[in-house]
Amino acid sequence: MKVFKFGGASVKDAAGLKNLAEVVKQFALDDLMIIVSAMGKTTNALEAIVWAYCDGRDTKELFEQLRRDHLAVLAEVAPSDVAVAAELILNFDTLRATLDRAPSGNVDKDYDSIVAFGEVWSTLIVSAHLRASGIVNTWLDARTVVRTDEHYRSARVDWETSALRITELMDDLEEGPKRIVTQGFIGFSSEGTTTTLGREGSDFSAAIFAYLLNAESVTIWKDVPGMFNADPNRFPDTKLLSHISYKEAIELSYFGASVIHPRTLQPLQKKQIPLFVRSFMDLSAPGSTIDDRSENDSLIPSFIIKPRQLLISITPRDLSFIVEENLSVIFKLFAEMNVRIDLMQNSALAFSVVVDDSPRSRELIDVLRAEYEVRYNDGCELITVRHYDEETLRKLTAGKELLVEQRSRSTARFVVH
Image 1 (cartoon, rainbow, N blue to C red):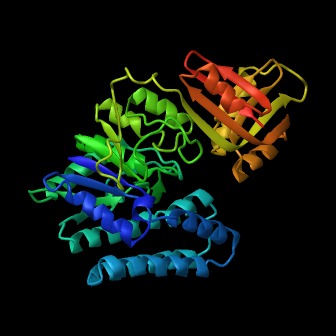
Image 2 (image 1 turned 135 degrees about the vertical axis):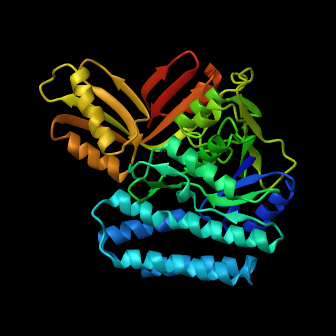
Image 3 (image 1 turned 90 degrees about the vertical axis):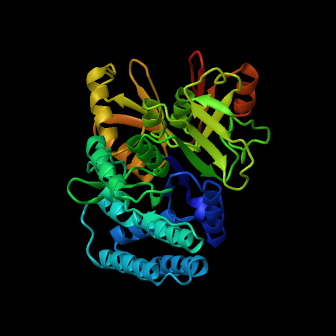
């Protein structure tokens, strides 16, 4: 079986869904597990509904817009599928009933239960359109397979239970080319609640299903021709990374490369399942291949720019040394408030970190100030360069105030203002 993952950009409208069907038709003899994200900017819209709901603000206008948009796309790509139209309406009614109840008091839990609807809606529409295009398929609720813990918004997978569930599913499918349409991003806890795997978690879902199925390969279909050494929207002279190793891709994704979700590569590496990044806009483009071969990793410098960063410096009020005891308390606070550290550096008296500038990070600063002296710089950028050369570093840091610099044999990192 091959695992295909289509992101929100590929199913943002009726034209995108029709193009998805054309891609699937090119693989008529293959068994396919098709993972689909929420349509377009649906996740952003659902997040706005979450924040309004938790703040006690009205959600009706945002809700109705999503309802109209999804029903309109379904009417265009599968106008005669009355059953899916009824199922879609039922899903919206379920969300409306959720929004009419008081919040649970756990924002992250409410977030997962609401935002997960986006993937369910999109897959219902994709499945209906594939049938309308003559492609027989089975719609699957990923929550019947992907078992997780209750770490909402970044749930951890119970691999053993999930493996048992996927075996039961495959045994029930009929012979012949299999087409299974399911959701990325979402799972189900042992307590019976909906969970999510983190933003952009659909890539991870593709890897989960590939691992469970011992798949032949995973293909992530994007609106770009593959992985580049930098963001092509920001830098004019980027180069395609046609072939890199799992290790290199993990490093790039960890540092912020947006093409691959950070957790995607590890399950694939364990079973040596290759990952292809290809363009759904140009099937003839070669794309990028990620596998266990590393001979091409260092041929091209790769650089990642993360904007809107906070550089936070934490100092004990009594000017005592920053030692393991202090660090364990600090790390625990970061973990409890779900703030990811992108870079860290310590001296005798201070511990400095770089994090995304978010409401959660700002709240963490206030919490830290109860025990520590805390200063921060906002408006920062974090620049990471893999396999750097001095010319690349000069270009990227020219005209910028350098706040932090770190270098290893293969990676240079700078915090600039």
